Length: 474
Ligand code: GLN
Image 1 (cartoon, protein in one colour):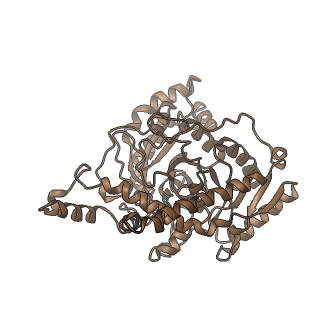
Image 2 (cartoon, helix red, strand yellow):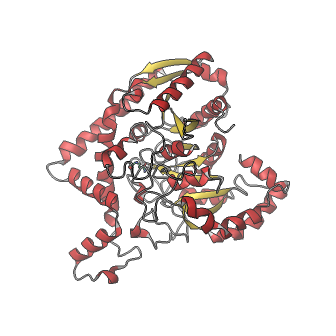
Image 3 (spheres, helix red, strand yellow):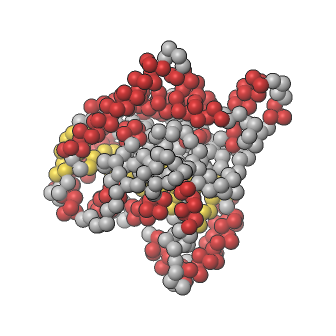
């Protein structure tokens, strides 16, 4: 935890200057294996001395001495911000996103930018222009996506904490695959100013760490209404810490639709065992129904591509580090064909095509406006459920980390890996993935907890109680 790290720096058990030097000097060698990073930040060196001094003189800021990795779709002034795409491979941000401004003010040491699926589209980190990311727990397996660089950086111990973004599960699913904690806040709880947009009505930035307490600290730093993001809001405060007796006063809902055929048997068994453990401790468990769960993926794969096609229309390779001259372009149409054809990868192109289709005249009502209505029904399922229960418990994913290539040739099977995480984005509610246990091959299984919108801080406090019941790291 951050406090322990600062304590160690203070007592000279950690030499901060050396640890940052080590990171920067041995970066290529350390990153080679898992490829969690796209770039490192040498500038961080200039901050280390002061950071250490503050810690040693008891004036430390919240994040002094803490190594942080930032997903490469979040702008950090002066650093490359590629979003994992060839289109932005030379793009350096000219300003700090709101979250970065806050992290810097809290003394955080940003050591590098993490690899990701191109424009955050993917569940395996196989779509990055900068190569695949490997899961540090099993190098033959994917880390999940799209924030797989961030979760691998944390799981491998290269950094203390990381930021990711979650549009349909991109924080929680890779957190589950890599055995770390990943938190997706309420939509709007964290400013999106300076986040390279994928699907603006779903995107949210959140923390990834080894424990809930560190996620909570980061969330408290980055959350809050921001003048630069009209959709941003303040979520509720929660001062009191929770304990198991408080949890017993809640009813916990377990939706039957999340245990359907096709879910990995070991995932199911371990979640069920944990539910039994909760029951034996005297926690109230209730089976609930989220009836429209089966429509979440089709609904997402209409709304998201529609927003993607609109958000990505701006990339014409003229304003962002263009290579136009190399492409032998003679007219405007040629320019669009060649630069967009060259700059975007297959998955991104597929979604732009899908999105343009569902928004086109004649199909708009049939697809896009219908999907908006289904989205409403999915939200209503949760509203209904939260009248009966205080918290919803599910697996984070139907499966554990899969092997490279296993799903990349079959987009639909890849899309299905988000089935348990998409609904929370469509409903805009907070959810967290906690590492529960490992299967017999040593691969992590994640547990997801979900609450009503704006109860982010309560969800984090409750998650600490669950974490203590689980003991994943011991
Ligand atoms: N797997 C989802 C997708 O491919 C995740 C997107 C996300 O959350 N950024 O769209």
